[in-house]
Image (cartoon, rainbow over all chains, first blue to last red):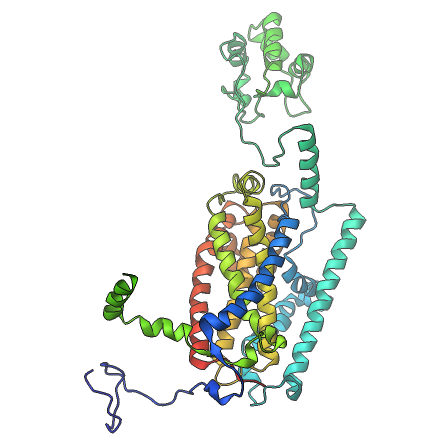
Length: 291
Length: 223
């Protein structure tokens, strides 16, 4: 220690630094000042706190085992579901639907009320500066907090009830329940229960077949690509799962739903025989996803 | 032998005062549920920390299976939920723990408020506590998207719409969170990074500050 601990020195430094030691710190109360039995934090007090913790933990694990975490279907922007935030955001969600907190007043709805409320919560000790600690002797702070709590519970309840009514009105079931029921049905039938989107690639059946030559010669590759994965037109891999031979023949002759023009005359003009076209349709109908 | 090792380390690092400061300080009677049952309200802060530790541990195990991209995210969660041994329990703990930590923190905040414990000299600790509250809310918000199911996707779309309607900064904030024009691949990776790296780092720093301040200032006296 460069400067020693002698208290009669005019300037006292912190350790061996050049920082002057101040004396402004508000010393915490000594608990011997309070009547009663204070005890050491570890292990005495922590053991008691742990006992409370164990009660909570048992309840928590019971909940976890009884109610598996919900999981719906994979995200799909076109799905028709009622959007709901997690429960602790419901009050804010509902508040922002109020007429004077939405539409043209949305700035007020976001900054005006929740903004002021959260800011005053953050700065509460600087707003409620009196020395009094008992809540019934701090009527302004306490009543503001109680009022906020009431509106919190009220708004959450309104939002939840509204959601339940909406579910009933539209006949919807929350997706995590749907998925669970579907999985249970599939399991009973011995099918795979996954709802995840399968990314398995479908292979071309009989790649070496002469129909492949016809396919290229007829110009089908222009839209459906040489690997059948599709370009301007859809992929034809696994097309046999959707259409049988007769339907494919009809599509070649008459086109498809206005998206694909008839190709038959064009193919004949290319010097492709009826027999080859028939074989092509047959080959396409055999394009099925491997089971 | 352990004593020898301890003494060797202690001579060089002087670690005894550190743990004695944590372990040996006196806890007054009025917060001890063994003496006054009503003092269980003083346990909510400790329970919040307890659940936070559970969240960190279960979250660490979840990242062993979770894949933060839009094609595999759902599949990885489903696999974890249905195929992995105890995956359902670990995910359940993380899911319900997220709600429980909010409940505990809410009760802790109310206890501090109604006992007036935030008054001088503990103002700063209250502010840090509120910041912890906001970080927890942020963790809940970002974690909600990660399973990438419809509920997660639509809730996030609504959240970002609300962020968008904040005057002046809203559109920038939305684009920052969303990482593009739509809720998509970028949004998921951003939320994942914020949920797993940014916010937990901030949370740990704030918790350290919270605890150091409790030791410095002591527990508030009886009413």
